[in-house]
Amino acid sequence: MRGIGRLLPAVLLTALALAVLAPVRAKAAEEEAGIESQKPGPKPQLILIHGGSFLFHDPFFRPLTRGWALAEGFQPHYVNYPLGNLPAAVAAVRLEARRLREKVGIERVYAYGASAGGTLAAILAGEGDVEAAVAKAPISDLATWEWPLSQYGATYYESILAGPATRLRLSPVNRAAEEPLLVIQGREDGVVPPAMNEAFAAKFADVYLWLVPGGHTTERVRPWIISGAMRWLAQRAARHAPQAGEAQSLP
Image 1 (spheres, one colour):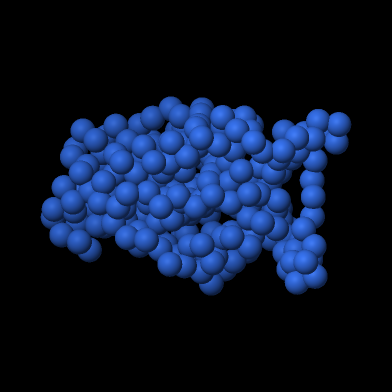
Image 2: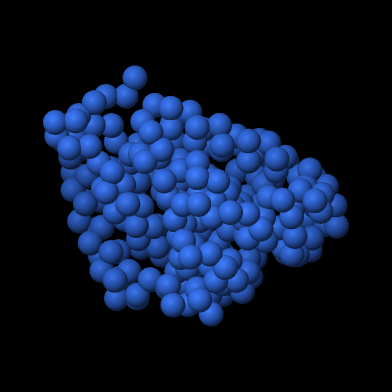
């Protein structure tokens, strides 16, 4: 499978996770001392998109992600998209991405999402609305996702205004993949089948698959997964960082 050849090496990912711990601790010490580190030009902007089956907010999402995003130099933007309305949720994250692009340029806008939010982050990367994105356990094929039918009932898709045609149209696996996307997938995920995202990564050259231990919410007990995701995005953001002589501020 073509996606397996592009799995991030385990040694590299372990090193990324360990390396990011020092910046997080340093950032915490600076904040306690009232110090805010400054970098030339605007910070890269990070859109953060929670999960919850497109029906609920995830109360764990912000506490799990904010510290790591700040430690990697991102300016976080949490999107509270409309619930119970998949097309409106897609429109909301598109609007936020385009608002930020107008301020800082697309090369300084990134996205991270989990589960349902991962699907939305994948759509942004696929459409080229962000420079790169990470999607943790995204539903990449809405047309074949059966888990919510057993969890919420046979009318689940009607409850999020996603009929068969909408699910086919909005499934990331059926769309373009214009910008790099890292997909993080738990090997024991019982909500989003690993095979779904293995097939997604195999289809596109710029969709990279990182298989990790655990299930659908594995990052709650393995924070190194989030740190690795943020470092992956930060490495891409560093390629577009303004030089010292090009420093500018957000309008």
